[in-house]
Amino acid sequence: MRNRVEWRDAKVAEIRQVAEDVRQISFAVDGPVPRFDPGSHSNFRVEIDGEAANRTYTVIPAPPGQIAVAVKLHPQSRGGSRYMWSLGEGQEVRLTLPENRFELSWRASHYLLLAGGIGITPIYGMARALVARGASVRVVYGARSRGLMAFAEELQALLGDQLVLRDNSAGEHIDLAAEFAALPADAECYLCGPIGMLEAAKAAWAAAGRPVSRLRYEVFGDSGLFAEKPFTVDVLNRGVTVPVRSDQSLLDALIGAGVEMISDCRRGECGLCAVRVEAKDGQIDHRDVFFSAEEKAEGHRMCACVSRLTEGHAVIDVGYRG
Ligand code: FES
Image (cartoon, rainbow, N blue to C red; front, side):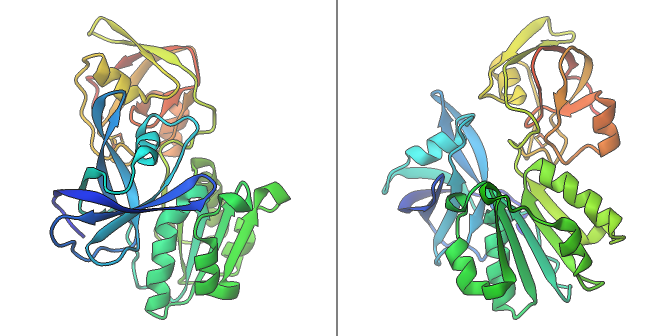
């Protein structure tokens, strides 16, 4: 695991459509690229509305000297995926060498990998690494339709009948209880998908009596339970009212309005961007994995990088750090 963020220049080497809404973009990187683990992430300097910003993507297996990502074009993109999709071959970018926040333990007798939609990106790399080491692995991959499943052919060739595809448009869904019931006692499950899938998996994992430490996960920050709508916040002791567009995060809106904020992961993991919600007339759509279910139910705090109000207005305190 890398501990230091190291920015590099790179050029787009290849672009490949790997699903209806997913492009694999490979970058030739200046200088050597150290070996990286499956589940690692790179940050990219992107341009959104003429302003520089950073976006994080999971890296997928790539030839030596390259870093590759698979980017889903989000209809409600806050700008990151739109920028990545605008890249052409030969275009120059800035990116960081991969670092890992979603690591395989390498200690289990069997691995169940669950992917929902674009959550396949770390799962794809993990499956390849586990098979290469001769580990016992099963992948269950659900998406809204077959055409939206990136890397399905590659996984089929890799895993044979240990790959299960669940096409939601055909009425197929992942049977979490059955999958967990079939696991050996010391199996581990790795999940990447939307927050609703994670919450269902946590509940099914607990109901199956399995140890919390053996369910590992990450979610996409833009996968809420509600569609994005605009809302406004009054910032306590700052005297500003900040409108937040449907295609913008609360964190970006606050920074854009000149409110000083601290943040790191921008994925709802570290909690650095948390704000206290003093009053609200909408609901909070919690999209982070930092706060517990109980803290989310209290509704007093939210991670500004990914969570948002369903609509309406709130009064927030950005000076709060808990
Ligand atoms: S920046 Fe890490 S949770 Fe928001």
